[in-house]
Length: 228
Image (cartoon, rainbow, N blue to C red; front, side, top):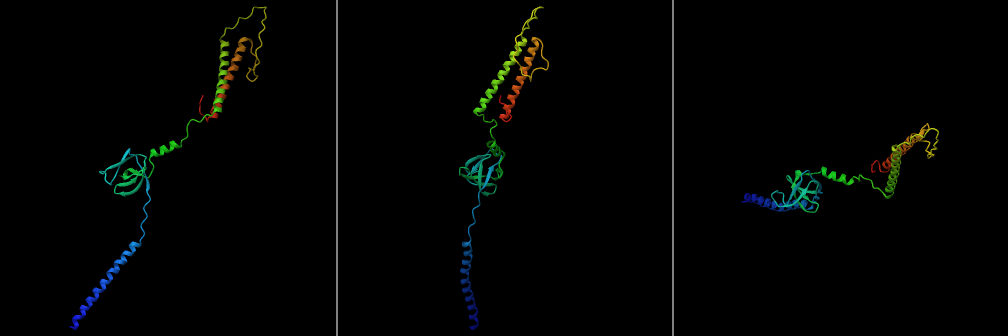
């Protein structure tokens, strides 16, 4: 009997030791799990709808579920999570849903860049203030006066020339108004036709110079834009 009691005592001691150790092991496993801090939520990434005209947004990660919205090319959404080939996104109005991941891109599509360039592009036509309008009106008035002088000279040329006086008679010609020395011919004209030609040359030079001056001033004023 003495030898049979020893194994029984060993079994009882082993069972008691296991019973005391198992709760401690469970507590040791629970402590690290409770003390581990929760992982921070991922920051939503901005995505753009690629070159697809209309994209359906579904309530569940299943294209057979209810459609909650539609988005178009260039619309901006926030990517929240992925499930296979579907992505849960948040729309600009705050609604959330699932769309196909293949239709979203991190790069701005061409239509978005085009809209941005159009907003940044200044107006092609410059703003014309009141002073500029008055200056343009004055230049046009001067141009009209030069045109009138040329028309008058052309009318004089078209008029018939009086026949020469009979021999023995002397006709005193009316003095012509003085002309600018810079535009007079090097040799003095003789006769009525010569004076008419000289006046025509003076008028043509004045008109050409005035027109070119008007054109240069307008182009310089408005950056090369022709507005006359």
